[in-house]
Image 1 (cartoon, rainbow, N blue to C red):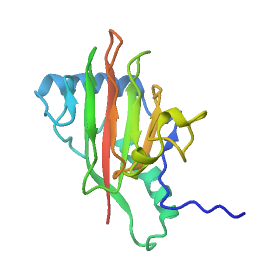
Image 2 (image 1 turned 90 degrees about the vertical axis):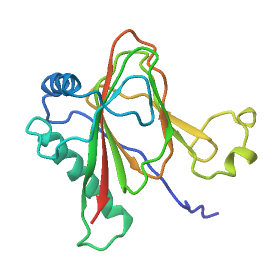
Image 3 (image 1 turned 180 degrees about the vertical axis):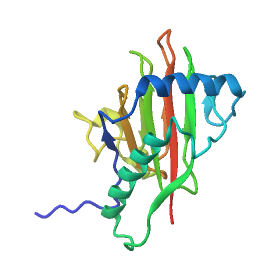
Image 4 (image 1 turned 90 degrees about the horizontal axis):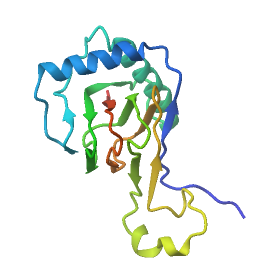
Length: 193
């Protein structure tokens, strides 16, 4: 029997990036000192305002994000002249018990998270199955082993220095930070131009 995947989604990851993570972490806390931030999907914690795309400290990271996103774009079959560009980006700093509610990144193509600081027990990023009828058909008590075919949601335990890329239409949330330390990430939205 031939089994074909249909309406496929993905999570891409990259580790060991050529960036100065300590400098980025210091810069994130400096940004927090300059602004009260925004209230979006964050429950507690700090969500920066959208940042300047010409930030000298973060430019090497932005270059890596866009390079990886443009590689992924090739898998989509878009016209060759289409490129992935930065739409916006921001810093998230979550303290103990802070989390992010389920949300989408509307009007974006690929979304990216770079994990600057990830203490143990600081929560997973969780992705919800976009097939809404799935939750009414396949129940957890039916499953021996969770796979990409039968899961209603999928969690990724981030690591410090890790980059995650996923389609912006995947609904996701971040579990509460149960550690006594900060979880720091930088989130990016991209657009196809």
